[in-house]
Length: 293
Image (cartoon, rainbow, N blue to C red; front, side):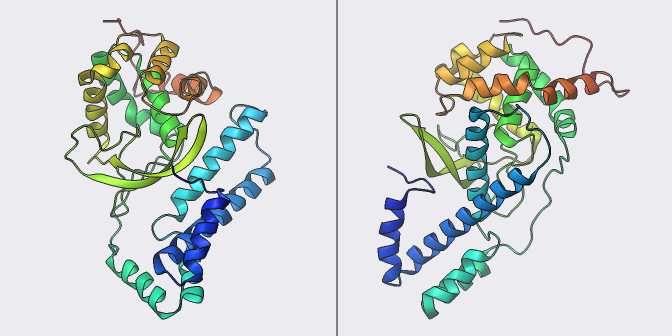
């Protein structure tokens, strides 16, 4: 059973190891402290914001927002983080832990490749739309539903998991490196639900060379696996597509289908689709209908 970021029983075990100057335990304690600090900072920043949240104010919104902040804090604290964990290890761990931190830093690649710069939802949707149309034709699913899933998984492209060299993994659908996957992969801390309770895990995910590759693999993943036979052929029934993803076990989040539908019905999505349809470059065709197979 894995521990969440706020599992204080887990902290107690780490503290005992840290008290014995275990370098690995000191590193994990310092990283978790950094993640807690970042989560608190994110919460304070959101409370200070004057903007209206995407889905309005509600207890459910606050819960989902808190979960997203928790995951974002874990992502930010992983790897080099913001340097707070390194400082704590140097101060608390003595010479051996400091050497471990220096070794880890030296083995990290000094060159970071550029990642896709999606500045807003419209730019993200414009880039992925042709690929979503192509995937939608093969799966018998409306492309808007596929874009909504990618938007949910990545925060409209702002939180795509980084590859091991710091560049983008281009994994827009959270597909794990299992099922005979032999390509590149990246390890990432994530939240998985066990009996409805979110718990922190480290899992391996697939990494791709570009956006086209992730959509190609996503299409194969849903087409070739009998587990997802009910996901295909929903046409414009985006809610049915989302529900089929959840019941087939695509994600452990019990509200996964509802979240996809809410993104699809959100003012942001409607505004994005409207602007793209009215664009002079016509990235969206005159008909969005998809014939169910």
